[in-house]
Length: 159
Image (tube, rainbow, N blue to C red):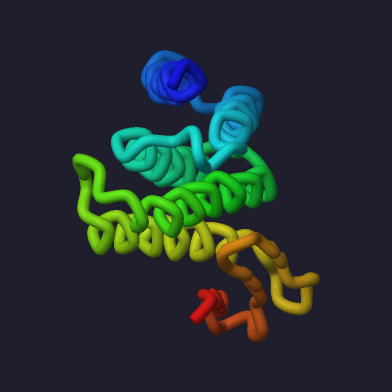
C-alpha cells in the first residue's frame, strides 16, 4: 500500500511539473522517464493513477508536436501504456471500488495508443525504418509507405 501511495505521488508530480515547466526538448524526456519509472510495476497502480497516466501521455504527445522535441522520445510512453493495460487485465479479477469502469479504461488506453502512434507516424519519412514497439500487451508498428499517404499505424492486441 505504501508503494501505491508513492507511485501516486510520483504520477501527481509529473502532472504538476507538466503545468509548471516549459515543454522543451529537455523537459519532455524527463517527464516521460519519470512516468515510465512510476509505472514499471503494474500491481502498484490504482484506478485513479491510470487515468492520470493516460492523461499525462496524451498531453506529452500534444506538447511534443508543438515544440522541437524529438518525437522518438515518445516511444518510451508505450511502456507506460502497457503497464496500464497489465493493471487493467489483472484488475478485472478483483471487484474493488472502481473509479473507472473497465470498458471506459480500455477505451482511454486505446485512444492514447492511437494518439501516440499517430504522432509517431508524423515523424517518419517514407522508406525510413518502421518504429516497432513490442510490449507485453500489444505490438505497435508504425511505418510510412508513400510520401503522399499519411502514416500507417498497426496496433495488434492479444485476443
